[in-house]
Amino acid sequence: MIQRRNFLAASAAAGLCVLAAPAFAADKTDPDKLRIALLPDENASTIIQNAQPLKKYLEEVLRKPVEIIVTTDYSSMIEAMRFGRIEVGYFGPFSYVLAKSKAPEIEPFGVGVEKGKPNYQSILIATADGPVKELADITGKPFAFGDRASTSSHLAPRALLAKQGLIGDADYKVVHLGQHDAVARAVAAGQVPAGALSESIYRILVETKKIDSTKLRQLALSEPIPNYPLTVQGFLKPELKDAIKRAFLNLKDPAILKLFRVEAIATATDKDYDVLRDMAKVLQLDIAKL
Image (cartoon, rainbow, N blue to C red):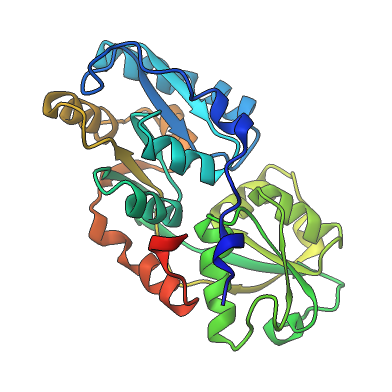
């Protein structure tokens, strides 16, 4: 069973300092500026730079200044949403479930569609010439995950291993490396014999030649995971919430959609993420206490 106190590291103070300033407007239901938080799954400056077309589009459509924010980790993003420091959050599936448990008023409204599907998978990989040839070989060895609140680089692969009778910190050593690309690079370099990350991110790393796929072997794929949800604060006035939702759901520009690694954005509901709550049960996690 995952130790609750270790599952989500305390939010780093630096990760929240950029979010500490109050919204410009006294009325939080209709702030003068909208703060949009994107996932910290790659270098923050790169994400912010790539998000400039999104910022411009939203400012034109919503007629409000928009600030793009990338928190230091998933935990600080959850806390930012919880305390109203951001208005819109693009969460990982499980980090959304955690955020929803702490801030029930937040509303999921959009989900990315990739290759015609609103879901994706986690890929478990091993060093090509390393000691791990199949899942059973993970026993007694280190296994690399990404962020503790990541779905595809922690929860889903850890649940898959648990179903195979491999329990973290009992049957293998759990190692957290933070970002997806850090996992792929560490396994490719043989620094850890095996690890897990988002399959879609893995394919992009291979296609852009940021990792050498000949140095890696695929061990398994997880069951389908609902794609990352876009969420909005429930306390915003209805007209503003509707405008935000329409702005994202009507996105057609491929350059902007590429930021989310999707072809389109479809509607989403909280029920779509019950599969993550089921994975948490497999791992004997009490989401309310994480």
